[in-house]
Every structure is written in C-alpha cells, then in structure tokens.
View 1 (cartoon, helix red, strand yellow):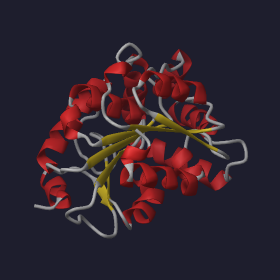
View 2 (cartoon, one colour):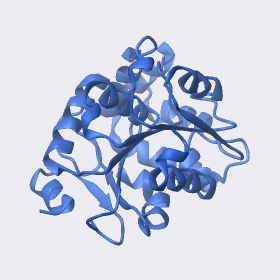
View 3 (tube, rainbow, N blue to C red):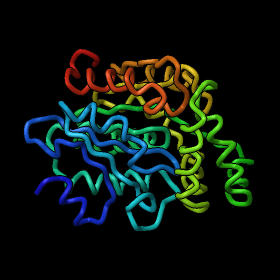
View 4 (cartoon, rainbow, N blue to C red):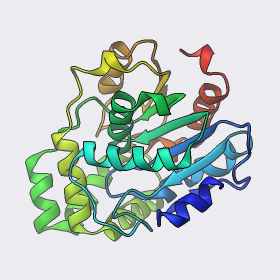
Length: 261
C-alpha cells in the first residue's frame, strides 16, 4: 500500500509531492516545528519532489492529525517511529525543523535502523525556552505568538510571510503551542550526540535568532561525519526564507549522501 494510503488509514494529516510515491526513489519525510503543520514545507514539496519522494506529516494535535498533542520530544519521537514502521520505506531520510529537528535527533538515537540519513534544520541539541514565553503562551497567547514570530525571520523578511507564520501558529491553539514549547524546553541531548551514527546534514540560517548558528556548529562538531550548511539571507524559518539554497543542500545530501558523510 502506498505511504499516502497508509497515512490516511491511520488518520494522519500529510502533504505529498506531486509525483506521489515512486518505487526505487529515496523518500524524504519532513517534520514541522512547534505550533506548525505539514504546509510549512510547501516550498520543498514540488522542487524536491521531482527527484525524491516528498512527504510532510502533521504531528499529533496539529493540522489534520486529530489526536492529543504531546509535551515531550520523546513522546513525539515514539509516535513518529510507529508511523515509520507502518510505512516500511527502504531508503528513508528524515528532516525536522526546530522542534521537529529535536524529534529527528530522538528518532536517530532510539531507532537508527529505520533511517538512511537525517537533516536537522534550525535546531539544536537543547532548546531552552524563556519562562516569560511559556507563561505568555498560556495567558497572552496571540501577543506572545506575534513576538515569537518576529524573532523567527530575518530582519528584512517579507511582512506577509511573518503574518502568515503568526496566523498558522495561532491556528494551532494555546494548549498545543504551549506544550510544544514545553517539550522543547525539556529536551536535552547534548551528551548523546556522538551516538548518532547515520549520515547527517545540518542547515541553519545565518540570521537565526531563535536557534543561532552556534547551536548548529555544536551539532556538527558532536555528530560523527555531520556537515553544516549556513544559509545566507535567512533566519529561523530558513526553508521558507531562502528555499532555493535550502533545497539544493537537501537535494545534494539525499541523492548523494556519501559525498557529505
């Protein structure tokens, strides 16, 4: 059964590349960040989908995956691992943004046999959240979201993109977004990165204020054989702000992983 049909049967929300699933091609599954949903990856679906099977998944409680959200990265990773087992894809690459990158790290540490490679975008081995943000997501949700989103883009980003990003996070709702950020705050894999033994590409925007390049540089040093790509003219939402450079780095890694590992 094709992956799309399996996800439908499991009531998991997703976006699939225009080519659908093609046997023999590597498959890239994309995991969004806190308060996000699969459509965060729409700039990757079609361009990368020409040569790669592309699939973006809504995490529990997000988008069209109608079940309770979670408040630990380990819980999200266990859920994702179950999905991957049902999909049973041979050449599988997993890409995560921000919180999604933490989830991907967790999967790579706990379930490496399912993966051909990982891509960590705008993330880190630890993702602390300032207490006022956690409190604000409970008590002043919309205003706090707008503040967070302002930090998520480079200074010269299109205001339309910023507005769309804020609206998307608001649609997730206070409880989901708060619990996502709580999960990030609880996450810490700094002492375990050397155990990641799958090919790894790390991507970060040069102007990322939420997960600055220093975090990605730390990932590169700690994960054996990892390669870091810093993307110019991009902040935390690197896959949206400079999708052409981002997509090229991902394409090169997935189609020729031995060149970067």
